Amino acid sequence: MSLTTRILRPVKASSRNRFQCLRTFTSHATAPENKKLPLSGIRILDLTRVLAGPYCTQILGDLGAEVLKIEHPTRGDDTRQWGPPYAPHIQGPKAGSGGPGESAYYLSVNRNKKSIGVSFKDPRGVALIQELAKKADVFVENYLPGTLAKYGLDFESLRKGNEKLVYASITGYGQTGPYSDRAGYDVMVEAEMGLMHITGTRDGPPVKVGCAVTDLTTGLYTANSIMAALLGRAKTGEGQHLDVCLSDCQVATLSNMAESVLISGERDTGRWGTSHPSVVPYRSFRTSDGDILFGGGTDRLFGILCEGLGRPEWAKDERFAINSSRVANRVVLEKDIEDITATKTTSEWEAIFEGKGLPYAKVNDLMDTLNHKHVQARNMVKEVDHPTCGPIKLINTPVKYSYSTPGIRTPPPTLGQHTDEVLSEVMGLSEEEIVELRRGGVVG
Image (cartoon, rainbow, N blue to C red; front, side, top):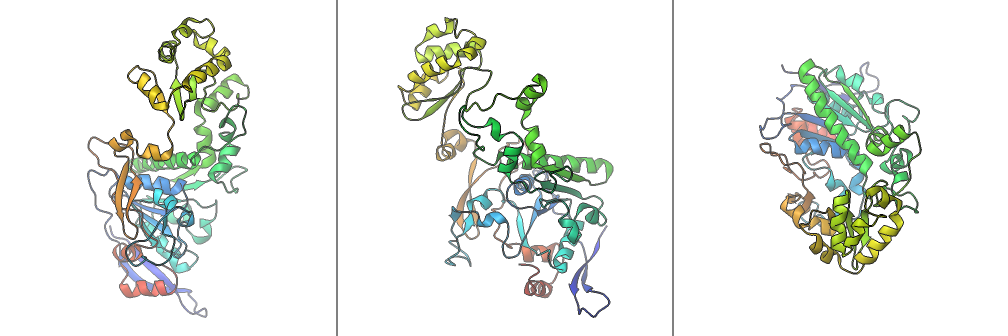
């Protein structure tokens, strides 16, 4: 059934009605379906910025959803300015413009999306988003609780025009609770919710994880919840509001570490670096040119390690023969192991333990990781052609399906790249009407 919609524009203040109808039109059909893309035919309105939200919607885009990324018409997503590094503009109208280019941060989480520049500070911009929401299956936002209600873009307002809408709100601390009004970047939540306390070397200060893992896990939880809500909608015919926050997701992913505290009733044992509090040896050791990590998680695996290190007698030494003894004598054993590993290169140790059944790994930097033969063989780095930056490499979607073909279909868009396309093809506006909105600063 078609939907009749209206885009409004301001008229003189003296008028009894602040708005008059700019255009009445009939909605287009939903996005075309592709049977090899699980979420094809699903339209997502994305009002998120930075990392957790864009990561969520990128996952959904990889799976085939049509993602319409609503950005400020001149500034865009905050991460467009988060550099260096930037991929320079080398082709198209921006080539030689003197601008910095597209930031690596932005490029990492915004593929398979269409960028529409819309200002919802203008009532006409609000009207545009409200009408797009009527044509959407999912609405994702990451503003502080209550912010979008001022513009009529909250769940309760939008569900009146689309009762099937799945609406996901991503915040630092959720829609309820004593911290709900507090802004929350990843590192603050890592600190507040325990992760930073258990991360770092044994005698060192607390440190943040090397990547924004709380943001990323929140994005994963949100994507998962959205897909569950869509399945729920197929049963009930109704959408729902999803309240997702970094703090909850961080507590959830403390997993066994938090459960140990709940069961024991005692405080955690602090930071362990690359070591494990209950398994020895299970950490990285210096080599002559880097680091290698060994996982002697069982007595049998410890025996393999002893053979490779040239110390088979350790496997029968009462101080080390069983794991509980190794834990008790951790300091002595780990020092003795590192005295030996420091005598050879990492590659020499890799050759010694190859095929022996012992879990081991070289500690790689990011360049070595991205060029790793296994990473390359698994097609985890893919080159795409960007409209202004030319060929760029992106991290690929990680899951391989036997039938479905999710992946990178389009590069991260430039700011407002698809504004005219969406306003014309989805909203049905004429070129003249789009020009008028652009002239008024409503779109960009």
